[in-house]
Length: 290
Image (cartoon, rainbow, N blue to C red; front, side, top):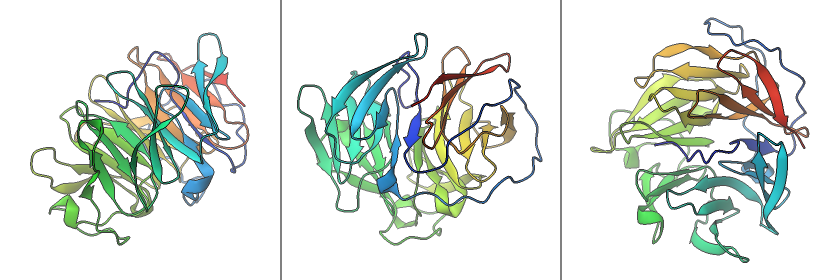
C-alpha cells in the first residue's frame, strides 16, 4: 500500500539546500551511471516532506498539478516535516516531536516522541508508521501508543536476518508499504533499502542504495526510491532487483511518487522547491515551484 495518492501531486520540500535547474525531457532506463555528488542527509529539523500535500515554512500546502494551483491547508505548524493521508482521508503531519491530525481549524496531537518524528507512511489498513533517528514505530489503527517495530535507540546498521526490534537503523528518511504489506525503510546513513516482513518481523536488506531518501510503491508492486548520492530515481522490482533509472540526473532530488497512470512525480529540494512530472513517454516538466 502506498503512502496515499489522492489525485494530487506528492512531493517533499527541503528549505536549505541549493535550488534545482531545468531537467532534460528524457526518460532513461539504464544502469552504471557515474556518481554525481556525495551528499549527506540534512538535519531533520530543516526538512519538510509531503505526501498528498506540500509542507513549507510552518504551513501545509495543497498542490493541484493540473492547474498548478497552491492553497494553504494549515498554518502555524511547529517545524513540519512529513505528511501522510490515511485511507479515511485524514491528513497527518509530523511536526517536531508530535504527530498532528489536520481535520479541523486546530491540529490535534495523535502521538508524540521525545526522539522526534520524521517520515510517515499510512498502512497497512488503518495503521500508521513513522520514524525517528534510531527507531521506526507503528501506531496501530492510527491512534494509541506508538510501538517500536525497528531500531534499538542506538544508531547503527546491524541486525539483518533477525527481529527488526533488535536491529539498528541510522537516520531513516523514507518509509513505504510494499505490495505484500512489508514495511520498507530508507535507512539513509546505512545506504540500504530495508524490508521488515509483515508476518515475522524479520528485517533484511532489500537493495543497496546510496543515501536513500523518498520511497514509493507503484500499483504494479515495483518500487521507486531516490538515490541521494547519484541524484537519480531508481526503479526496483518488488524483490529489490534493479530495473533501471527513471529520468535524468536531477538537482538534489528528495522524494518520489508514482501515480496510478504511470506518471512519476519528483521533488527537487532547495529554495526552488521544484516538483517535476516524468510522463510515461519520458517528458519531464515542472509542475510547481516556490
